[in-house]
Length: 58
Image (cartoon, rainbow, N blue to C red; front, side):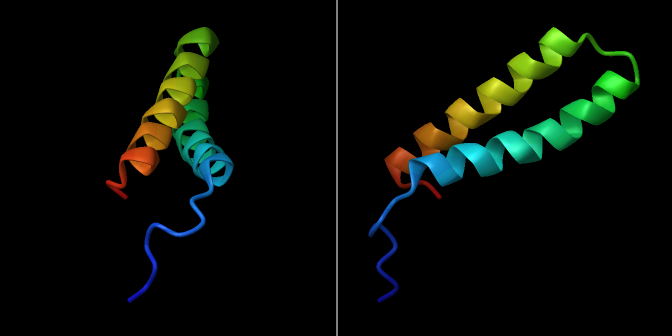
């Protein structure tokens, strides 16, 4: 009815996931977390979001 699987936008999913994780990670970095760990967390969140999007879980 809503064409859930039509026109999947993997780039949009990656950007949205990276922005969401980046906001949380920037707060953690401001509290003293290593910035490289923060970038790793942001990258991992983007990859997981892409996998979920490709698998049709979201």
